[in-house]
Image 1 (spheres, rainbow, N blue to C red):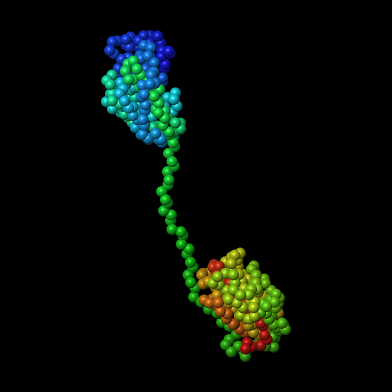
Image 2: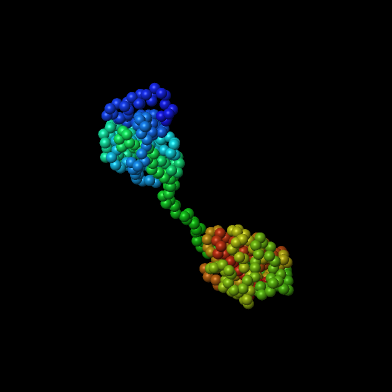
Length: 374
Ligand SMILES: [Ca+2]
């Protein structure tokens, strides 16, 4: 409330007080009427005006603050009184809270806040003034806060609009403490399997000598011979979800598969790498035109992981199965399989992917010959 808006009677009271000899208009501090203007009522009534040359200044530490921070604010020099606030704009309402002032000063309630304003509590000369102000919490109410004071040197001389700017910055987001990451989940490796035992040969020891169905023997002249040196696979047909592929040299995956062909340059292998999934099968199959007593010979490479479930390479004839055991090296093994059957049947060579990517099973030099195995 500025002077000119005061009721006449109030002005008269102020004027009367101001004219008392040797007295100040408000020797015990500014009245609440100054809350908005910070203009010293009694002083201006006598015709005095603010004297900017008195040289009063404000000092603050720090001058850059965040919500809730305490700020030390000084008014150097000899002074008799003052009224001071901190505002979010020059003409805004006082914000924040002053801490209990030192002797000679007191709170003045403004804007319904008993600690929003400080003023003098007596008319003695003071050797400077020092206060602590606490910024409102939460967020900055503006980027710049204004410490605004009117400082009285004496009753007749005062300086209005002594201002100091504070910069309000939002508190930096809390840097979360470095999280103690849980250890990466352990890859639970399946147990290492013992070597897969071969199923018993399809005929008892002694081989072809005991063939009962020699008279029924029927084997195509081609004998399903292939060393995979050509594309035709010697009559074998891929029938699985995955393909047996020709390859020469090592397979592309490290530490699995043969180093090269068993015979010639090429062999066939089932690539366990993507997109092959566990359980996928590559099946190489003859026609079901084999019967009687005959021998299936082939070479196999089972340099694959033993992780469980394991990779498998096996030969099927009807319901009978011959497993080729896993090896721990890239060497080829030769197998001879004596068959004695009174029904036409097909031979199926099955590669089955296990859980591990190291599963490049390979075969080479296949042939089916009538009679007993050599
Ligand atoms: Ca070959």
